[in-house]
Amino acid sequence: MAKKVRKQIYIEPRHELLLKHLMRETGMSEAELIRQALDRREGLMPFPRDQRAWQEELAFIAQLMEKGSAPGKRSWKREELHER
Image 1 (tube, rainbow, N blue to C red):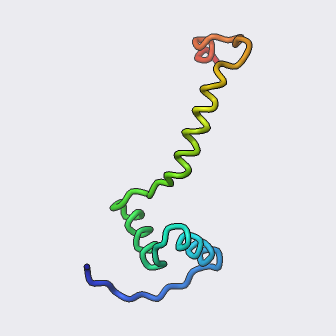
Image 2: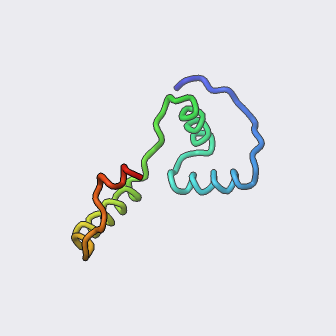
């Protein structure tokens, strides 16, 4: 493990609430969450993906696809959009 430097920081109450929420959601420590945020800011680490949200989105898209096309026909052509 790399050597770490102790820091004391001040955050706003909303940040405190967010940190506590993220701790419960991810199981990570406050320090690790802050380190990851700094790494992302520096561009060293991609943002973590919320797999649950992505699965919900895929299910929603599948439901829309099952419904098929909307009834009726459009009254415009694609080329007409470029004329505006």
